[in-house]
Length: 379
Image 1 (tube, rainbow, N blue to C red):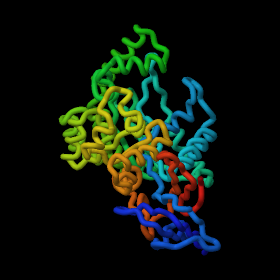
Image 2 (image 1 turned 90 degrees about the vertical axis):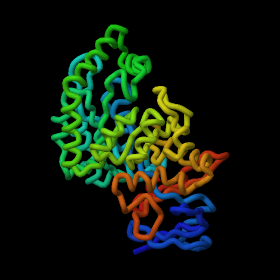
Image 3 (image 1 turned 135 degrees about the vertical axis):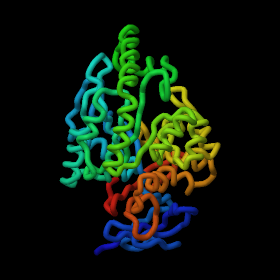
C-alpha cells in the first residue's frame, strides 16, 4: 500500500496550527508529524494551510442545477455530477443534499414532488463510483404543504437521510415575518400579479391551519424512523425554540433573531447560519445578521446555503473576526460533523478519513489548491 505524504503544510488541528507533515494511507490519516521538508515522492504544500474537508449541512445547490431557470428541468445525471464537481472544487468533501418534501399541487405557487426520484439518482451515481465526494440526504420537511407525510413515507432507514429539518414558510412568521420580503422573492421568481400573490398567501395560510400540527408530528416521527438528526428552521422566538427542544432538536438552521439564538444555546441546540448572510453583512430577508451572532458567541456552524464557495470564504472571515483559525475552521468541519454524528471526519487526526483541503490566501481571499476525499485527489 503506497502512502501519500503531504508536507511543508500549516496543519489546522483542533486547537492550534502547526507546520508539519500528514501521511495518508488506505484512505485515512495515518500520521501527523511536526516539521519535515519535501523529499522525493512527497507533495510539498509550500506553506499552504491544510484543513479538514468541509462539511455542508444545508445547500440548495443541487436544486439550482436541476432547475437552472424557472420551469427548466435539466437532465438529472448531468445536474448531479455538476453539483458534485462544483462542491469538490470549493473544498466540500461531505454534503447533505437538501431536498424538499411536501408538495403543493394547487395555485400558481405550486411545488411538485421530486425528492424520492432525485435521491435514487444520486444513490445510483454513487454506486457507480461517479461522484467525487460523500453525499447524504437532508429532507426539508415543509409543514405548510399538502403531501408531506406521503412523501416522507417513501424514505427509510437505508436511505442515508442524515437530517430532517422542519420548515414552516407560512407567510407572516419565521423567515417571512415581513410579507413584503416574501412578495419581492416569490412574485419575481414566479411572475405573480398582486392578486395572484394575495391568493397565494391566503392559500398557504389555509394549508398551515389545516395541516400544520399534523405534519409537524408526522415529520418528527419519520425522522426518528430514519435515525436522522432533527433540525429546526427559522426559529424566531423563545417559544419556537422551546417546541424545538421538546422534539429533541440538536440543530437550529438560520434562527431569525438573537432571542432565538440565545434560547437555542440555553437548550443545548447548535446554531447554524448562512455564509451569504455572513459575507454580505446581513440577511436578504431582513432577519438577524450572522456576524452579530458570531460576535456574541452564538454561532456554531456555517452553511453555504445557496453559494457553495461561500463556505470557505466565511470560515476565513470568522478566523479574522475571532483571531482564531481553529475555532473558525471548526464551524465548517468539526462542528457540523459532531452535530450529525459523523465521528470519522471533520478533524485532522490519525484514523479519520483522509478528507483534506489545501488552501492558500491571496490578499486575504482563500484559494483552494487541492482537495482529497478518502485520500483520493478530487480537486
